[in-house]
Amino acid sequence: MGAFSIWHWVIVLAIIVLLFGRGRISDIMTDVAEGVKNFKRGMSDEDKHERDQPKSINSDSEKTVDQQATSNTTKLG
Image (cartoon, rainbow, N blue to C red; front, side):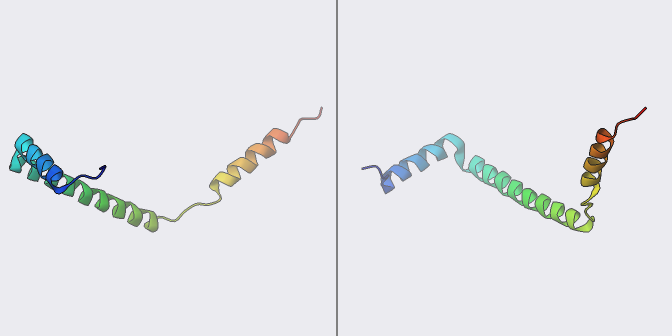
């Protein structure tokens, strides 16, 4: 009883076509496809950019060590 029959889907599809029209639905699908394509292009460009630049691993750890070393020193005298 919880599943939709084919007639339910036909009625829903007919209402959507009546509300939006065939041209509007195809415009929406075109926009969605372009968005997905641009997203994939952006992700591949980002990956390419990350591979081209060398990573600096020890820059953050050096700052932490320097801060700890300077905070633990005290002046005598």
